[in-house]
Image (tube, rainbow over all chains, first blue to last red; front, side, top):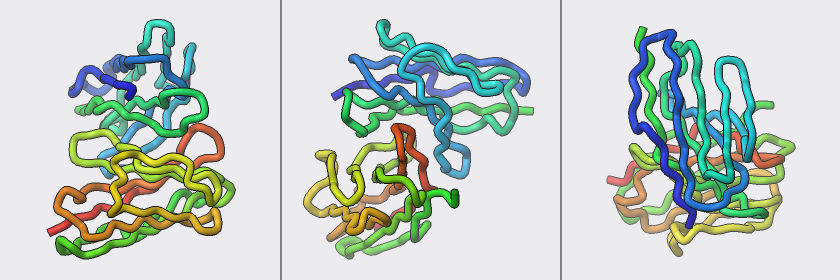
Length: 110
Length: 111
């Protein structure tokens, strides 16, 4: 099956700093998505980004499908950004079976 | 949009017992998913329904696991003869398109 690798596994930031999280995937993918799991366990869908760039407030994401990676940018980080960020994708068209990476645990300290 | 609702939020059971979890999706969503998440890992796909039809099942879904969505609305996930390795967070999600909305999960502890 498809492999999804995320880096770094852990990241500690001072409030206000910027960060880049990376997601590499092993094969052609569809439905590349980014999620945030808050410290209480709730998973929130941040982006659906099979290719190109999207922005939502302080967050933006870029997927370069031909090179099999996606990046999530967090600017001016806040303590509420803390949690685990996952990327996930499906192996092919017509499948809704998301394969998740192991996540990047982000801690933003005041 | 009241969100995806899961019940119970926590369940402690003895090894060998059967457990059943319920998921109520967002009302207009026709797709419903079950995932399992263990500590320090990303969610793992278990199964997916479109309306009442179960279209995809993971090989993780052993014969002790069964999921139903009888009327295309709520879903149940049953685990028979629970084992300690079944201890995990069980997440339900629903969608109309490709972006799932997750519930808060049911945390199962098998003792």
